[in-house]
Image (cartoon, rainbow, N blue to C red):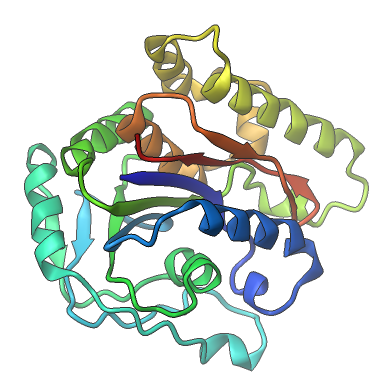
Length: 262
């Protein structure tokens, strides 16, 4: 199993030629070069929360254009990937302790189809989306990742799709020196937490559970739904990533991490 956490950018802008996403596209292209083609993709997107983990189970999932205020072509984007109902049931079994639900009606949100259209534009790989839990509890989502590790021996890509910086107002702050300093401080903490050879697995886990103690944590994440997919990824892998990237996206530094199968 290969695992990646990506900062997925602003709505459909990465697909519309927005120059502020150029470095993000370069990272995704590099990830694709390193990844074998998976038999299926599981995506944990910041844009779906449910009381219990919920799993898309449609044979041919539709798309949710869950954004507003973008050009008309943003609402005709297509990504006709197949679903994977049998894999959805396997995920449900793996997450049994969380009382997960299957959902055959919900479509794939933009946290899924935008990055996948960039990484695998052929749309020929089955895709299943797994929701976050509405609690957004860091430890619970680490445990969710640990449970998904039951599928570790499969040629599956697990994609945590969020954003390591997600203060919407600050993306558009023109007087950004202080904002940028806080952004970099949190990103430095995040990279150290995930990659430092001086930290054990238990120490990394403790830091991720207590992420609010990081420098400028609540400035960078007034609400943590865009960070929590990273907790699922780390819970699944329980080790430092093989690659990390620090592109600038929407004028802010962000983190992207790749764990390659052993």
